[in-house]
Image (tube, rainbow, N blue to C red; front, side, top):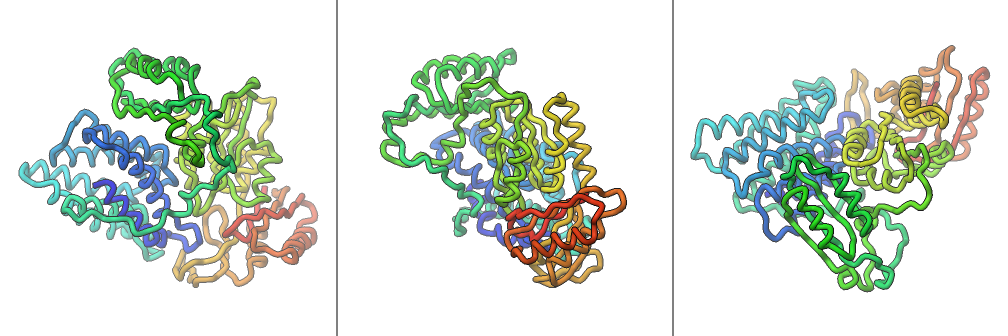
Length: 537
């Protein structure tokens, strides 16, 4: 049912992407939900047997780590809540499934600091409330009938979202996340009726990760032969998962121990899987035990990126006090963050949100006591927070919503200060910078009474469309003029990959002529989609 649902979502991801409220080239809700779902069902596909509770747990755990963007994180939380309701069950009846849908809604609402109605949350809630009412009134209703009717309720709720959110009504669209959820539910319903949806879409680009040039594996170089994976169902309330982690890390590598409330997901490469299992049973009962001989399995084949991503390096040097992870894209932008002290760059941003697991992987590669994560995009903050919850390290999320805020936060960092002082200073810094972005419209629409035509150049200040024009250079000049005032002291402009040298020099001349009393810098950022990113402090 879930595989069919995700396939239907995946087949319609482009339609969901096009429902973006603003007409800028960053509509990625469908892609993020599809990638999150694809990560989740990948684990389901390898299960041969299992109770519905075990399968729901597997789905939720994989979605938790594979979640991308706000919509993907919310979807993972819906599944997490469902798994909690189903965890003790071998199989479930219609009533129990309806209650699981509601459990998912409750968990998802709790995961969002300020839940907004007219979004995916509303669609999920109204559908679940209906399911609970129906199964309470009619004990004979089949799960097939329940899901078909639930889809209709979800459809009505989705169609009503423009009445609940003004921005949707202005743009003439329904909520993208809610639409993605409806496609998921429709695929689930189809499977229950014996019409499983098959995937017709190619894997989204964001799922195809770049290799790191590790080449082929020589089996003689494999130090630990057995890839050992299993789930611990916690039954011993006094057990300490951190003690278990410390015990097993001494006898293996590529270790991942994810403590998720009622279960612990374990992965390790070791030569003594029996020892690992012996320590694990002290925490609880074991399920989904999988032990593979890697020398036999991987002889003369390429190492997959998934295996490399799950590896945790063993550091020889003592940890530094501070480390940094920044999400950005563009050679010049990346270099700015490196120059400011960033240890790990995650290539991502608009249209290419990294997953929770991508962020965890970057964190794991840093040998530091305290690690600051700068998402630099509002749609990545939830995934970063989810990574913090999973990681065993001390993670500090600086909620930077754009590149300008991220750079300003890095400038505010003081290596001599304490963690709390740096967190306060960096957070204050992101509130002191104004960010202007210049991009183009991908469709006709109306926003705040402004008529926008596909191809128009758009000037955006702190997420709001403020200027429309035909010239990226002129629109950027207009943005800077709107942002700069007597209190401004620093202006920085990052030129995108589509800005030529002549316009770059022209921007330099404009700032020199018009802002003599202010420090200004023009850099080749190399970022896609955005002609210019301007920061005024």
